[in-house]
Image 1 (cartoon, rainbow, N blue to C red):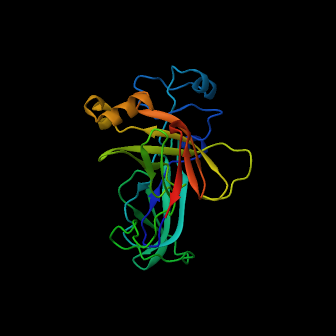
Image 2 (tube, rainbow, N blue to C red):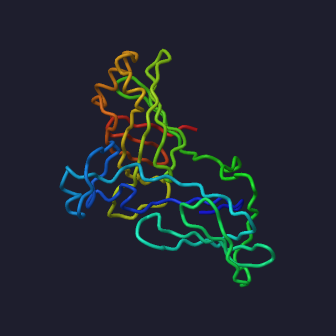
Image 3 (cartoon, rainbow, N blue to C red):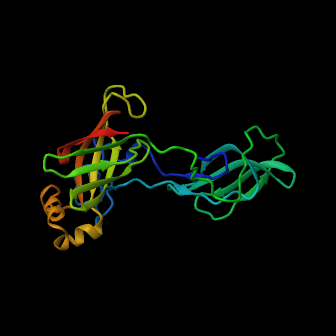
Length: 263
């Protein structure tokens, strides 16, 4: 992926790696030290003595800036065995000649290959500074908040389908709060689903993560936090839960709470 300023990002991602294919694969957010890699797909699915696919899926990786003129024509070429065996190419120019810039996926520097073929892509500004974070682009408008039957309130800010990691804030009153992470992966479905967040509920396979610092200091936490961690989450760092989202509300099944859309 490249933006109009020439910032280039790559990501190792597909349906299976994302965590969505629970019919054929096991997934885990937990550390899996000492577990061997499964010999085949069937063993991986049924043998809990083998390592599951680790989640969350790898995030976007920023690539070095191309040191010259480029266009929006980019391509990735397989060069061997393994996910890192990939060559990146970006159409561009250097020293008055046209061609393409190239590097291996994990390499630090680009080299130019001249072809003298006229450029066909849209020329990009390719600024020297990092412009990947554009403050003019608004954040997701889907924020939610609500009160649980237990009395605490939960807030989810700027939920975005494209982001698998969302902050989840719990407030217990009197200034006592707990910051968690809500992981979401698009669940398997058998009926059409509109793009994005709409009036039709979009179901996610969710996982609530307790940051290690909060979990390791549980005994020293305020009473409401301690009770929540040991009661609602069973003292676990990761707790699976269904999550359903519409443009009106967001429900976290494992916590028994439905949050309403906020302005």
